[in-house]
Amino acid sequence: SQQGEEDPQALSIQEGENATMNCSYKTSINNLQWYRQNSGRGLVHLILIRSNEREKHSGRLRVTLDTSKKSSSLLITASRAADTASYFCATDQMNRDDKIIFGKGTRLHILP
Amino acid sequence: DAGVTQSPTHLIKTRGQQVTLRCSPKSGHDTVSWYQQALGQGPQFIFQYYEEEERQRGNFPDRFSGHQFPNYSSELNVNALLLGDSALYLCASSIFGQGGNTEAFFGQGTRLTVV
Image (cartoon, rainbow over all chains, first blue to last red; front, top):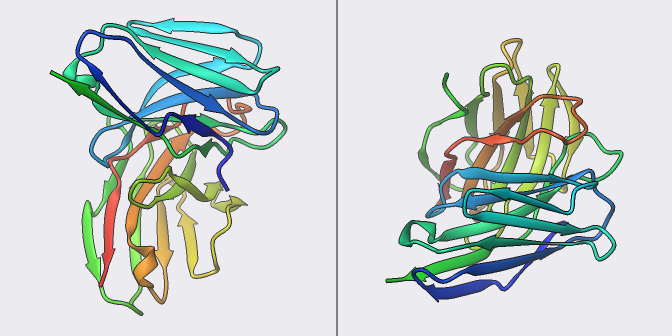
């Protein structure tokens, strides 16, 4: 079963615009991670946010976490064509060993 | 420093056959997890290996089995292949016991097609 649920399922925006993707999850977590996947290949780790953190930045990426609502958002600013990919949130489960569970992903398409 | 390597990259098998996929974890990592990703879906957790033992298992039948070797590399075996087993199989390596506080590194995957 999948713990996370991304929203929207698909998103198309113009190059240069900001892209926002959301993730909701069901159980308490230790941390939440965001991954990118290009063309059905391997997953690239983008950012990890711990349950006691509310916001984290990495370059053009901004991630927020609201544990009371069991939700997270990923913001990509000033989007580029190379950002076209699928984005997944992944959560562990508190008090469980290291297993991470993925959502179904958001397919992001950056239009030239 | 090599990351996670998986072999082969592509594989075509016939229904009923058996397949073995291989994974070498990132240097310094001792835990290997396997995921199945169907087209258009998120990765689904199959199982995790640490200290040559299966530590956790997802909702997959016994046809899916694995092994971890003393050098931490791992194999995923699938018996009696079904058409529905066609998917991208991803291997992730991590360090055990970090309470989920370290990122998992993924290989490029093995694309399995069952015909």
